Image (cartoon, rainbow, N blue to C red; front, side, top):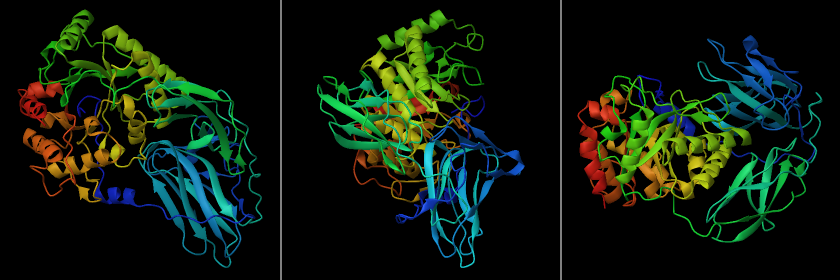
Length: 566
């Protein structure tokens, strides 16, 4: 959000990169029964044996892993892209399927020396495990190929696991064939709503995925050790079982657990809020914007997001400390009293977790529990109504979902739950942020995507739009509105002034035109939605402080407009 003090990382994504993200991989056919995985030490269970990494960039790690006990972690540095490769024996004139599971920074997978057309595929940074897959055909005289993984210059480290070169046996002696995994243990209900039941279980060695069964019928498949089953009837008991899977087959079913949905629930989280609401981030620090007390925030703001909670040394846990010195001696007691006064006036005050440097990682059941427990403790201490998820270092949808459901179970139906993803995080429903939002849709208040510090992005019509225009706001909002979120769960996030972000500022008039376009099909640009969304929640800004610095021009113009929407 803020380009000056640790809060908003600027990522410029060109139209070319955006277009590349839109490309889909070509489907591959099934291999024959005699095919094998020709890669050696494909799961890095034996460290880096059989693999060579440039500039000592790679290391074997025990966590996180996709399956088994090991994975590759390789870190680009300087002019080195952290390339790790292996020479694999193959048969001439044969077709192979090359795949690997990756996580973290940019990751590339490819094969060279095929004797025909060398191949590669890639993915941008991913918070959860994602499978890359491509195929290649060997030439008439080809008996070996080089299979490689690498990252990208200046990007974060990538993780890789379970590499496969699947096809005719090249005679090089690949890893032993997998065996059917054991049945999962520890299956338990981790949360319930009126329409969903959340489950968690223990990891199974050698498993690459899990199937979830409801009342004896398979309802979903996941790669992690938790899942949320949705679309259930209120006040109803359901039985659940889980199986583990890999290339060798499916395990026996786990022990049965029973989950009972609650009696009733809201179509989303949020307690009592106006139909159309304005969200503003309040800065718990001084970076040159007007220093405010909570009591100074204008009445046009319905949700005040206190920025930010801080990461602790405990994985997944956060804390909050008021920056009294930076805020002119504002005390914790005054702060708490001001929070109560805003709530008495019908406003919601929540704590935001993240920001550019807020590297909170929720990546396993323990860190998910730590997150839920610590956020709830902060809420109780300061009287916050809920939490805003503003994590810019990636989200693991499996465990963040688990954490948020655990928090909701503690806080109850009045919990305010908001999110502030970057534009790249909401380009596809397969992205970690979007997955998480859909997973918690029944307790989610609003997603206020940041339509700034971005660059060109795809709209819901497949066209590329540049930030700073009405079309950028409406065409990208359409992805969320047509991708599964309710209109009441979608807001437009913009900077309050040119100083509030590195790029992407638009005048309040442009914000209001975009709101009119989405709710009434008036004041649109070249993009016009196929229908209206009169229940659109509203708008968000970074920040109330930068708004005050500019004479509250943003809230004075956008606030009344939001509250007057149909």
